[in-house]
Image 1 (cartoon, protein in one colour):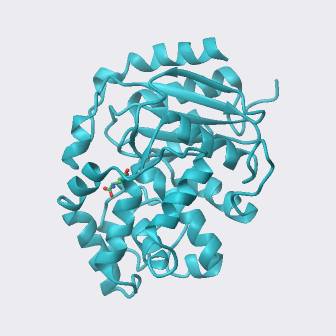
Image 2: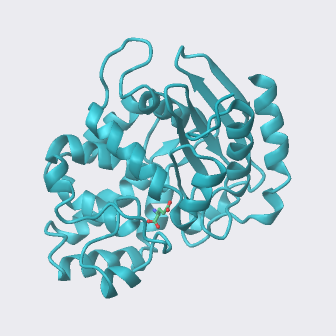
Image 3: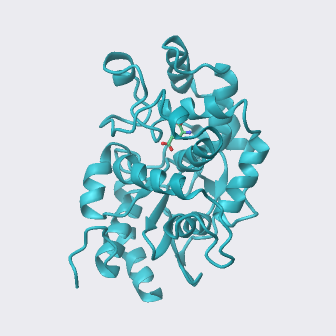
Amino acid sequence: MQNVLEEALAIGRRYIAQGECASYIPELARADKNSLGVCVITRSMDRYAAGDTKTRFTIQSISKVISLVIALQHCGFDRVFEKMNMEPSGDAFNSLLKLDMASDKPFNPMINAGAITTAGYLVSEVSFDDMLKYARKVCMDDGIVMDQKVYESEMANCARNRAIAYLLQSKGILESDVEKSLDLYIRMCSLSVTAESLAGLGIVLATGGRHPETGVRLVDAEAVRIVKTIMLTCGMYDGSGEFAVRVGIPSKSGVGGGILAVAEKRMGIGIYGPALDAKGNSIAGCRMLEYLSKTLNLHMFAAET
Ligand code: GLU
């Protein structure tokens, strides 16, 4: 496994030059574009790591997975999907287009409109502190904190998300206080994780929501099924379809450069590579996952060997 990860890293490095760090949140542009790391945690909790797997970076959109789990557990499926669909949008993560023109509901919980709707459900139910504690638990990483600089940088540059939030309010979808919902959404995006923490969350989801060692249930089984399915269809922005064909592992990426990948019953994979492709996915990360999927036979629909 260690050799496979080292090889994946070498393959990924070839693509870094073609990507760019996100800059619409100024603090994210300060990341080292050449950072790259991949961590695998297996169901027996064997941990393999290559490259920059201990570097802290902000979770960004991957927090949508954690927030959705919390919302499903607190509010239940019917309430969560009363005002939100579960269809891929085919548009950019921060698009307003279809929300205004084609649909009254956000397309899914993995795009910003959906995640701000989710934050609206949660703002009166759970405190940010409790969500942070839950994130530490499901990622099996007590070192997760909110990155104050990234939080402030995004708060100072969130006109687009604010526009989405007010549009949601105008349509009667976001019923909670707009600014509080937006604040909770951005706080969750600012959690600092590592490739190892994402692999930790990955193995918890891969094993049905239980801590792989203690067997203690961390995530409700039904919530696990729902988030993995939505990750498969909507987790990689408007690149989700091609990613599903090439990689075939339910995954979620964030503009901080992280990817969480959940290889069913086998392993959690966490990636850090802040150079992004045009769709906002870690450019090297996608290539590494494609390689891992082929080499370790992780595609959901892999041919029998
Ligand atoms: N905080 C970012 C935003 O809302 C998250 C985007 C992402 O990772 O896709 O713009």
